[in-house]
Structure formats: structure tokens, C-alpha cells
View 1 (cartoon, rainbow, N blue to C red):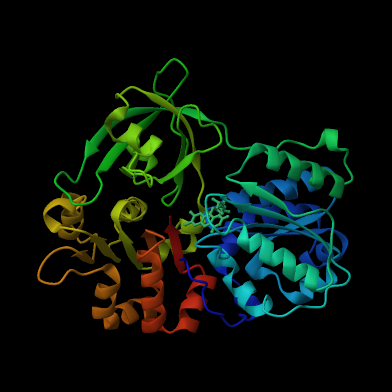
View 2 (cartoon, rainbow, N blue to C red):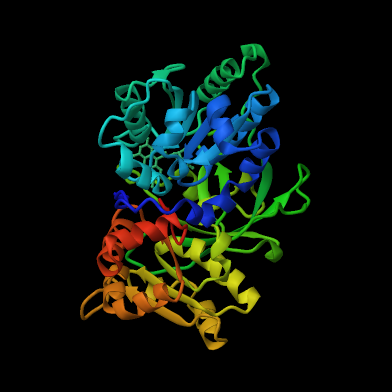
Amino acid sequence: MLSTLDAGRWLAAGGVLAAYAALCWQCLGRARRRTPSASETAADGVLIAYASQSGQALELAEQAAQTLGTAGVPAICLPLERVDLARLQTCRQALFVVSTCGEGDAPDNAAGFVDRYLHVAADLPALRYGVLALGDASYARFCAFGRRLDAWLQRSGARPLFDRIEVDRMAPAALAHWQHRLASVGGLSEASAPAVTRAPLQHWCLRSSRLLNAGSAGWPVYQVELQAVDAAGAPCALPDWEPGDLLQLFPPGEDERPRDYSIASLPASGMAQLLVREVRDEDGRPGCMSALLGGAAQTGTSFAGRVRAHPGFRLGANATRPLILIGNGTGLAGLLAHLRWRAQQGDGRNWLIFGERQAAFDALHADELASLEARDLLARCDRVFSRDAPAGEYVQHRLERAADTLREWVEGGAAIYVCGNAVGMAPAVHETLGRLLGADALARLAEEGRYRRDVY
Ligand SMILES: Cc1cc2nc3c(=O)[nH]c(=O)nc-3n(C[C@H](O)[C@H](O)[C@H](O)COP(=O)(O)O)c2cc1C
């Protein structure tokens, strides 16, 4: 489970979340062009508050601000953590675009809001609101955070503008419904509601797929390289991306069920490099996309896909900080992207803590990591293996053993990035970091954007 971060102190207004300010800068910029100040917007226009783990809710919130702006309705788009009760009390209309992560939890960037407010009803009689809840119906607690937020708003006396809209895996029909509701909030006719726009799909051609862990006790892991091609199959310009971003690929015939993969490479490499583990369902059948990428598809096969910005896992304001990169399995992909970028900058203040099963088979990208270390581009590299004798070790155990160094790095301004398993690794690391650094300190790091997770 992605446990909810403990309550952080409400930071002094001026010290607000540099990372998320950068993250929603574009959005704020747009809102600012339309309205001189946030407080004015809160009273006169529509507040769009989002809670997003991997960027989809953020994207929809930004588009909603744009739709309303086009309709001449001032709107401001803010991460939920920057929304306080005073703002909700002065604002007449608010739209909440929120995803659910972990096992029915709020995204990391909403944890502070949850802890501060959701436990007791507030007093919001003047507020009219709408909730767009993003989720995945294959999880037991579908859209749980959106439902919880909706229930709290109702208990607090706020009145819904429309029934909560729940979206299963970004299903187009539910998103079209949202656009219609949005149009009526903006005073537009439903017919003139613009469709939700997504970055255009491109063709991604499979160039290579190489098994990295032959002999492993775990499922196979492949290093997969894809190149953007045009409709005729000729290589074309790669879209730009930043370390931390994702490649979203659509298995043939599954237009509504794309799969997201962390991109390990930098655009300059000319390829999107991924780490893909073959997954199996409960009956032992291989997952469709992972099987295709892991050898079932011939090189030269093209898939529809797009690069998806993942602002919550980019470096952003952390680009100049020391980095503590923690992960397991294919989570190495998201961490490698950061390491490769830092190597390009000549910045070696990076500490990698990576876990897998057996050193003999699962030491993914060992040569590259050794080379980074040798060139002083990786200050410290801890690889731990859970199935090796005498006593297997997990990343959280290594963190524990290196507690003093961890504190030194954090005191020295380091940011912490966690990438990999949402079940097992991420909660264990979260619990250990909370114990070693203090739960409040960890919550503060999260609110400052210095603790970021890409877990799945
Ligand atoms: C690790 C993880 C856990 C998730 N847990 C849930 C869940 O408990 N309930 C749910 O409805 N959706 C769950 N989802 C699905 C997300 O809510 C959905 O993918 C959403 O579109 C993500 O939006 P975001 O990019 O704004 O975070 C989970 C997704 C991930 C990656």
C-alpha cells in the first residue's frame, strides 16, 4: 500500500512548495493572464484543484482551466496541497480532479490536505463543486479518494454542481461526460464542449529486446528499445521528454488500456529505452504488452504510443540537489534516466540504492553503474539482493544500516526518488524513511517536492 504521508505542518505561505510551483507554472501562468490574482479568482471564478500521482489528473485540470478560459470564465488550477480552507470558503465554485493511488489512497501531493482537513467536516455552505475521480476499476477501492473527498465536501455543506464522475483508466466516454459538465460550468452549450485532448499518438517501432536476467528466479526482465517512426516506418524526430517521463504504449486492439513505462534513456540517445518485466495474470498467462515487448513481437513491429510527461517524478527544482535514488526491479529505469542526465551534467552527487533477487542473475545494468562509479558520477552505489546468502537484504534494510549517511545527505539538501514496486518496496521504504528522518520531516520533504515516488 502507498501509505498516506503523515501530516506536515502547513508551511509558511512564502515557503510554498517550489517544486509544485514549477510543476503547475504553465497552468498558473495561463490563469494569471486571465485574472490578476488567485484570491480574486477564488471569489469570482472557478478553482480547479488537482491531486495527481502520475500526471493524468494534472493534465485534465490544466485542460479544464483552458476550456473555462476559452469560455471567458476565470479559472485557477492548483495542486490540492496548496488549497486551504480559507480558499474553499471564499470560492464559489471549485472543481476537483483527483486520482486514487496505492490501495485507495490519495496521491502523495494531496496527503497534507487529507491529514489537515478530511477527518472532520468543514463549513463550506457557499461552495458549489464538482469531482472528477480518476481510477482503475481493477483495484478493489475504485476511485476511493475521489469518493472520500466528495463525501467530505457534502458533509461540509458544499453543494454539487453535478454528480461525481468516475473515470476507469481514462475511459473516453467518461471523459466526454466530464467535458459536457465542464461546458455547462463555463456557460457553453454541451455541443460546443471541446473534447479532452491528449498528446497525439505516434508509431513506436521495436528495435531491440534483450533479456537481462537469464537464469533469474524472478520473471524475465527485458531491455527494450523503441524508435519513433512515421506511418511508412521511416525514423522520425523523437518527441522531447525529461528524465522521469513515461512512454505510454497501446497493445494492438486495446485502445483504452495503454501501459505506462518509465523511460530510462535521454532523448539524445535517439531511442526510448525501457525495462520491461514479463508479467503474469492470476492464471499464469503472460500480460499482453509485456509479452510482446519481451520477445513475442518481432523487431520492426510498431505500436501506437506517446510520451507522457510525469511532472511528479521529474527533477524540476531538485536538478541542483544531491539525489538519493531508491528502487527495485524495473524501477531502475526511472532512476537510470536521472543518473544518465546527471552524468551528462557532470554531477556525481548521486546515491543509488537498488534491490533485486540474486546478484548472479539480477544485477541489472551492472557495467553502466560500475562505469559511473569509476568516473565519479555515482558517489555511492548500494546493490542489495534479497535471495543471496547469508542473509538476503532489501533496500529498506540497507537504508537502515546507512541511517547516518542518509541523514547527512538529507541535511545536505538531497532529494529522495523512489521507483519500483508499489506493493512491498515503496511502503517499506516509506516507513523506514519516516522512522529514520522523522514522519514530519518526511512529510515536509514530500510537500517541498524533495521526496518523489513513481511506484506501480
Ligand atoms: C500504484 C498504483 C495504485 C493505484 N491504486 C488505485 C486504487 O486503489 N483505486 C483506483 O481506483 N485506482 C488506482 N490506480 C489507478 C490510478 O488512479 C489511475 O491510473 C489514474 O488515472 C492516475 O492518475 P494520475 O496520473 O493523475 O495519478 C492506481 C494506479 C497506480 C499506478
